[in-house]
Length: 64
Length: 196
Ligand code: SF4
Image (cartoon, rainbow over the protein chains, first blue to last red):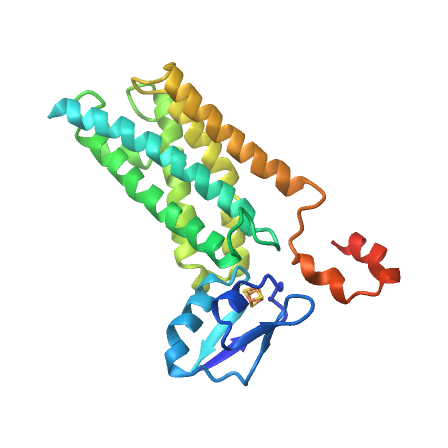
């Protein structure tokens, strides 16, 4: 599973970086940056789904 | 037994109003780019959702108990069609209207990944109609209208929502994270303020 970030929709509100710190860090403007590629490691499945669910701009998607 | 239904209807109505007040305040807070109410952003968002779902549970209890209550004589139609009731139709109708609006709000939220952000957000503005309607419904109908404690609760709810709104329209409320200035050269900062 991979995490897709829609940059045109993202508002840099940082909900996803709080929920998925293992995969995402914030740049200086609060936008999420992938730490290590977009592949979601299986143990982070739940956290990734929660981040997708809580993104206020619906900018995150999981692609298989 | 019949009295119990009436008591339950009143209690669950008041609890719903309190929950909806929390939902509205948190909803306004989650619009902010910075953590609100001393909570992380995801916590504000989750509390907002969970309190709304809990409000729906209490509202369904509220409506069901009135449906079976022999005094209220609520018909099934009155739970969806506002202003058609027999008992104080206007005030009861406001309750029905609020309930319909809330169902629309929660329904579209649960389906927002299918509907898309624009439709969901547009429908979500109805929250600013739904909450006052619920408040008026509580003030205008039922056994408890006019009691000091219901007035106190209602006024407290208004204070909370008005305070949240005042914060939202105040100049230091920003949709964007407060961190932005950090990487901006001092000479560009005035322009950044304009962008916000
Ligand atoms: S939660 Fe959504 S809008 Fe916020 S930073 Fe992450 S992707 Fe962007």
